[in-house]
Figure 1 (cartoon, helix red, strand yellow):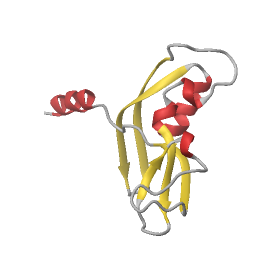
Figure 2 (tube, one colour; figure 1 turned 120 degrees about the vertical axis):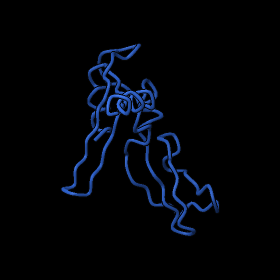
Figure 3 (cartoon, one colour; figure 1 turned 90 degrees about the vertical axis):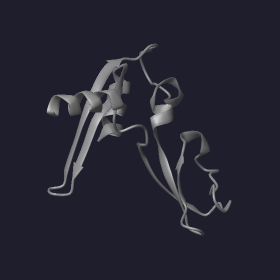
Figure 4 (tube, helix red, strand yellow; figure 1 turned 45 degrees about the vertical axis):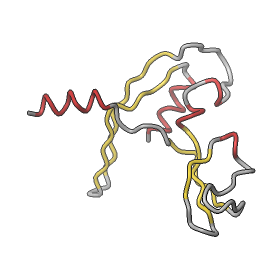
Length: 116
């Protein structure tokens, strides 16, 4: 959900910052509160992942088929990722997906204070 919002925002010269995220298995229910802001250097047209926040926060997860270790795999490592635990190249990839922060601590603290 956050990754899709971040991609859509990037196409319009914007960035997103997750402030609060919630998952409940009843339903299931996914909720997120995002802060949307203009990107510092917005250029019209196609945007490469290295130009904005998604370069760090939008990536893949790799699962090692040899030792079952899982890790985040950035775009720059695709096609040549190795397991950080055993060094195997036998990895299954999932994604791309949001791998950045799910919450903003000051926002959560303010919400907790309001709830008291």
